[in-house]
Image (cartoon, rainbow, N blue to C red; front, side):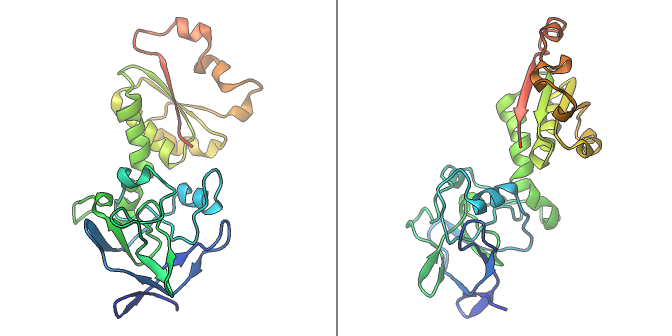
Length: 244
């Protein structure tokens, strides 16, 4: 098995050489951490749709070769995610990964598809040592994104009606945020009807599948008609969250 070298040790990463091409297990050397950086041993990492999006190189500048992955043990970094095109570290604008001297670029400052990685300290979040790492890795992107979008950005008032478009991991977290905020109605909108039962556990009270109607969702009685607006109580205006 090909591995990643750290000093005299060898580890296993998966390298994306080209857009849309299968990841390849390679021999990759990982440089020591520099100022304000930490070397991390990755025990669990999850796959986010963002990884797939950047692997396909759709809608952004392609940066290859690189090691993808950004959900592992609760690591998340707003500082480094400002520029998703960045494939190097902040301290010296260099990559910590290489193959025979050729740099392998980082992904959003984390690159967790490797047994070991080097990250900026801003990418780390200290958690309870008893927390199961195979579960909390999901918190680092999908859950925090959806929950934060509702509670910190949208900020629905108590009694509001909220529509969440997309009931994947991010959408479910957004619905949970709406429930915590006290929304009276949480309408889940998704093309997959099988998601509704699970969505109920996250506070979704109603479900709309656009494929069941011949008009735009916003024109449906439960999602924005003038008649429905006239009957709303103060503070109960619709808030739409487009999650995924």
